[in-house]
Image 1 (cartoon, rainbow, N blue to C red):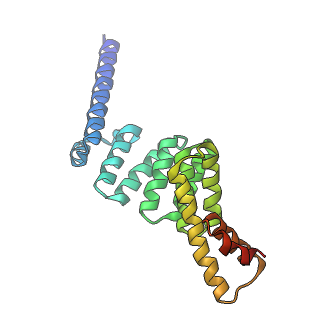
Image 2: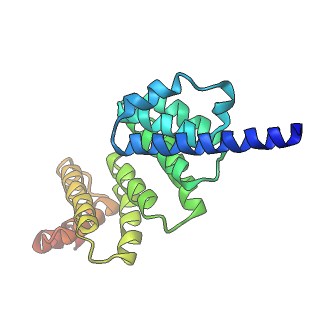
Image 3: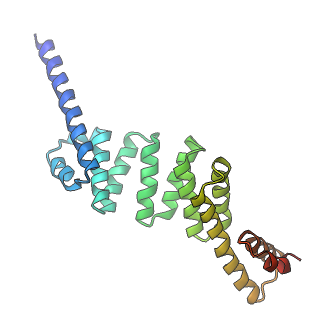
Length: 205
């Protein structure tokens, strides 16, 4: 009899847990983030081992622009399961929002280590490197994505912007008297890719 009662209670707990997660998912979809946090007040210490609940709480904090609290929830989720691509991408994104660029880079690379074709991680890494001024590395990631989707206008424009920035940088270096071969080469290449074909001739000669 005791065993049957225990099984019944376990089933009721599981059913209630599933219903709660479904409710929280609906609240996230409706952007009612504050409601999630109100429910979270009633959680028990044992709930901290529930990946889904902690992830929803993190999403609620992020939706309310409380990035540090969101980061703490996501890090806790990562300790529960460090193999999930969704939490790696999420941690990379929230780390970037907090200005933790190196940490964002690390998490995006973990995603790619698990799935080298992951579009989101490759795209965000490209943007990350360009924002840091490393256009050459950013272009490599854009090139990889363009191999898969060569007509994508957003990727083409983003890659073009890298060369526009590079043209400005290398032109300034040349104006300052920097005429080493690498400066001349990259200046010419950047002008070529931005359709400044005649301007590209001089530094490449």
